[in-house]
Image (cartoon, rainbow, N blue to C red; front, side):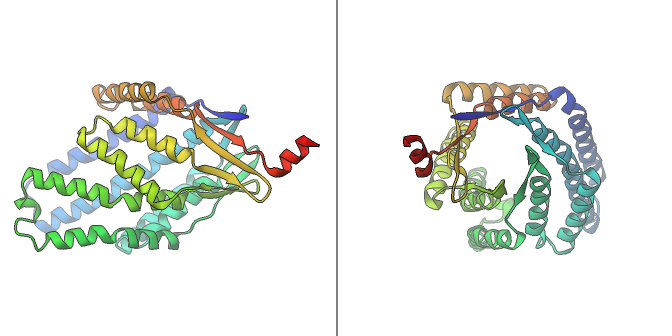
Length: 319
């Protein structure tokens, strides 16, 4: 029997958080542009670094409220998921992690990401039973190190090609390099998401049952269609990848197994996604809270989990 999720997110309640975040980011960008009129090189570098740090911190703070509302709005079998992480605790982890990431020139980032993921997963519960995040920062560090090698190789080769610097490239050469970069980061994208999808709940381990090469091929194919249509295909890429990976998500132990799935409606989902995207564009982003509400409800409400009949279950039925 399929048990469907539900999503009771309120765009109206989320709008104040989005508005403050939106205005803060716009204000920072305007101040940065005004202050960057022919400054000394060292001043420009310092100002850029400061802007990146401030924007990152504001974004982290915004995502606390965003993810809290998303988690609390998600339901299964008429019971809500509950997030109990406090803002003060989150702020301490976010600030210390950001400082360490800056001081180590980015090296600490995998452990920072793991800490943030563990905070949100471990502070979430369903039916008073908590989730437990299993991955660690060390394994993510190795993943990022290995999967970034093709990018380093690309930029190393470009440094030896005449006209390979950014200012000397033609528009088409720049576009080609960007497209190649997108394809080269596919192993990183898949590996990071696969790393994240590993947590426990009520004695079950939730993870993907995917094949590395098949999954990367699927991502590459959908990305290819997005590129050749100059982005028009993007909503379909998202829909198909969501359907593909949700359908390969399982929760299992030695005695029980549950499969997840999504009831895809390709044409209807594609048009609905584009409709919401256009509303976001024409309102200059102010529609975003309602976009989250409506897209979330459409996709989550068609996502389900169902128990797989084991040999022991079949034996009980036959008896």
